[in-house]
Length: 372
Image (cartoon, rainbow, N blue to C red):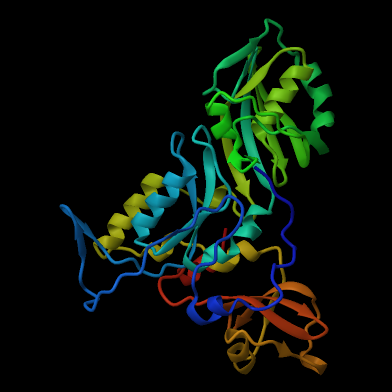
C-alpha cells in the first residue's frame, strides 16, 4: 500500500520492438494482475465459442482506466475478472492490491493502459481506517485470530502525541500475512501453513497521518497518506503496541491512488447498469473509461509532428534541434495531434521510444479527458 511520485526512468535501453510491432502485452512488475486470452484461430469474426452450455464471446480491444469503488468482500483479482468480463476486454490488470476487507479505489487498467500501471502504483495512496483497541490479531485486521489482549484504552491526548512518531520516513515491519516473498514463497502462504515468518523492517514514507474521530474508547478513526510499500495494518499494530494496548484494523477504505481520487470512482452496481444500457444501445461503455494518459499526470507531455510520430511508432529515435528541441528531459509521454503515442526518454534533444501505444478499439469518450 504505497507510492512515491512517478518521475522514474522507464526500464530498458532499447524500444520494445515486440511492443511496437505487435503491441503484445508486456508483463508489469508489482501487484498488477494482467489477464490475456490465448490466441484462437477463427475465420468467422462473428462466431462465438461454446464451452458446455456457455457461449463465449470473442474478446475485444478496450483501452483506458476504470476506477472501481471496490465493495468489501471482493478480492482485487476477482474485481479485475469482473471488469474484464463486463467490457469483454482482452487485457486487464490492477494498480495495487486492495484487501477483501477494504473498500474504495481500485484502478483497473484495460488494454494499452496496462503499460502505464507502474506510474499509478508508484504514486501516493490515501486511506481512512478504523483501529479497534484491545486486541492484536495475527493478520493485523479483523479477520485474523486474536493473539494478545489488553484492558487498557488510549486517551485522545495520547493518540495525538503519538502521531508525529509515525509521520515521515519510518521503519516498518510488514504484516506476516502479506504478499512479500520469503525465499521464493509469499509470506501469507507460509503463515497459513503455520510457519513463523520473520520479516525484516524496511523504510516507508507516511506523508500525513491524522486522528479523524474517536467514536468511543474502543475505536479511533484515522486518515493516512503514504508512499509505496506502506502497510496500514502494520501501522495499526505498531500504534497499539506503543500506546500500551493492542490494535487491529476493523475498517479500511482507500480514497486516493496516484492520480485517481474519489470523484473518479464508480461503484460496481453503477458499472453493471451502464453495461446493461450499452448492450441495449442506450449508452456506451466508453463513458466509464478514463483515458490511458490519465495515469501519466505527473510526467511531462511532448507533442511531435506526424512525420516524427511515424518514426517513433516504428521504435526509431528522433533527434530534434533548434526551435524544435524539447525543453524537458527524462521520462515523457509523446502525443501526436492530441493523441497518446508513446512513453519515451528525452536527452540532448533525442527522443527514444520505450513503450508505444496502439489505441485502436474502444477508448474513453472525448468528454472524459476533462475530469472534474
